[in-house]
Image (cartoon, rainbow, N blue to C red):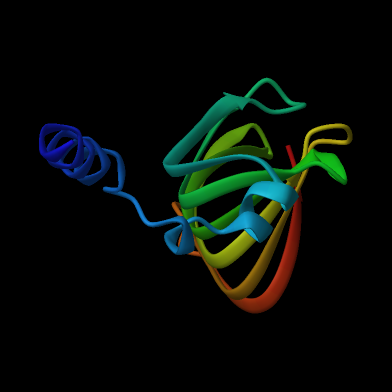
Length: 128
């Protein structure tokens, strides 16, 4: 019986490394998937490249077409009068709608363009 108790204590000790209280059931229930240091890249509707980096990227079961991002930065390229202009973007968060390809930048939005243009706002939508 002593051997069974000793073996049980060792066995139990190995199984309880992650306390149940450390698991967020709200996070599990609402998020389809969650990534850290997420990178998204592609081609926009004009055939120009874009890339977006987010500290955290996630999707929710209730809105599967939207990728929610936090601490966002990236680049987009646009054509104006036949010239390619690269825009460096930065924002607190963003929502990328995969269906209509809109990137909604939210909070502390900064855009620095290769042609010298700069923009600062609290919200901006970019059609990708």
